[in-house]
Structure formats: C-alpha cells, structure tokens
Image (cartoon, rainbow, N blue to C red; front, side):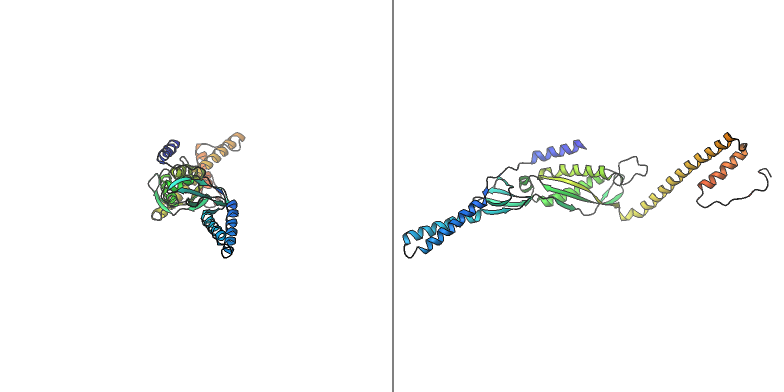
Length: 304
C-alpha cells in the first residue's frame, strides 16, 4: 500500500507545475492613510478653483488621480484565508497575512479559504473483495495546503475532492471483505481504524496534485445492499448460532470430563463403561439443551 501511495504521489508531482510562494504585497493601513490625504488634497483643490484656479485644478487632479489609483488595490483577508496574486494571467504569489492589504491595482486577486472542510459523501454501491454488493458513505475532513496547486493545477478543486473521495472509497471498499466471521482477515466492518487510515493515505495520494491534504476520514455508513441484506442477515444469524453451539459443546465436554475425573479421584462411585456412557449422555443433554431439564427419579437400576 505504501508503494501504491508513493507511486501515486510521484505521478502527481510530475504533473504539478505550480507551487505556492509568498506574494509581494503591503499593508493596507498605510495606503489608507495615503488615500485620506488624497481626499483632503482633492477637497482643498476644489475649494481653490474659483479664487486661484492655477493651484486648485492641479491639486484637485492630483488628489482625484491618487484616490483612483489607491482605492482599487485594497482587499481584506480573514484568518485562515489566502489570496492568490496574478499579473495578466501569470501567478505572482499568495498572500496569507490577515487584515487590510493593498497591492497595485492591475494585479488580480483570487481569494480562497484554507480552513478545514467537512464532507459526507453520498452512499455508493461497491462490490467488496468477495463480490458482495455493499453500501458505503465516508466522512472526510480536508483543507487546502497549496493555494497555487488548488487554483491552477485543477479546474475546480472542490469538485475534484468529491470525485476523488468517491474513487478512493470504491478502491478501499473493493479491497477488503465486508465481514469475516472467523476474524482471520482485515474487514471493513471489524477494522474501522486500520481501514480508515488506509482510506486517508489513499485520499492524500490522490489529492496531492491539487494541493489538498486530508486530516481525518472514516466511514459513516456501511451495510449490505438491500437486495442481499436479508440473505446476509440470515447467514450471519446461522453463523452466530453455529458459533454459540460450538462454544457450548466445548464447554460442556470440559465440564463432563471434569465431573468424571472428580468422581473417579474421590471414589464417590465406581462407573463401568455403560454407566459412564449413560452419565455422559445425561450431562450433555443437561448442559447443551436449550430448555430447562426435568429430573427423572429412577426407582430401579440401570439394568432393569
């Protein structure tokens, strides 16, 4: 499995062309101060147009142009939010600094969340290792770790996550049997932690090319498909009955053996082969019977 995951990661790495890097941006608070000064200059220039147009008009134009240049460059980032910066389609870096930010207006800004996302997939029908149709749904906690890959290496990273979750669930679901009554195999039903860890590694390998990691995952629904649910339930019940009978018989044999040994050691009664066989038969009936036993008083002897 480790080899499969590593090979998948190598294939994704070969296809990945983008890699996140810090963007050259500045604090928006300084530019906010510059914009306020521009507004003051523009207002002052407007008031000087009539008495002194030679001074007022240049000040008005300077303030208006400064305002028009500074205003479009503002943007705001909340905690666990990032902005990918582009220039005429070329990726220039990612800004992850929270608060009011500013960049030259002709740079493009694409915001995206790097918070954890929780998804519960739809129920899908999968054939397990033994070919039995089962229904599986998974819960996955994922987040973006590389904004450049998420935005530029896949078309829609959220849809990409949904498709890869379904593909990974189908892969893991077909790799193991649903159940193993003898507990000799790894099963979907009996080994949640191990199978969940393997599902997580499968998803991490599949989502690496999109700059996405998986923090947690597990199955939220796991059952036989409706068309065989009744038959598999009867099979499980029959297996449970057989196992219970087997345990009961093993215990009864041990108790009969112990009883005969104790009787022989303490010399309570001497039993020949016929009496020993009769006693074993009676004890097995008492110990293995499903109903309460009724005592029978024998007033004669075993041979009459």
